[in-house]
Image 1 (spheres, rainbow, N blue to C red):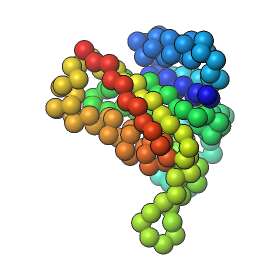
Image 2: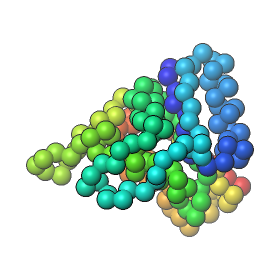
Image 3: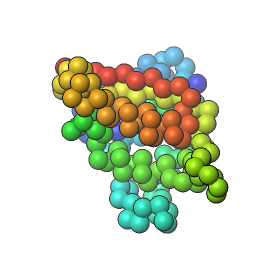
Length: 167
């Protein structure tokens, strides 16, 4: 299996970084092909200056991310829950990388769209320094809802596995 690991925590020395390291080593040990990017080491502008009215030229690191997404069978994402959501740099990565024409295409007539990244599954591993019950009760798993429903299922992932480490 071809795995694309994205460490979406800006700090590679974080707990998320350690989890991603362990996951990567285990995957390689089991014979999987692995490509990995660490978000904090990528160089790109995370801001959509004109929304999607015009697509900004992608920096080489984002071009590589798109190649990795197309290449993989399974996209594994590690991130911490900050303020009930994903880190801002990860949101900027999503905004810039999964743009219309690459990840999805709206129909000219009607409210529907084509999912251009069909055929991939995703594993999302999140960490948080609060108990899972608090995240569920107070935030209604807002980060997972966003990543699962508004991002990954919108562009294609057929199977999503969510793993939350809290406490």
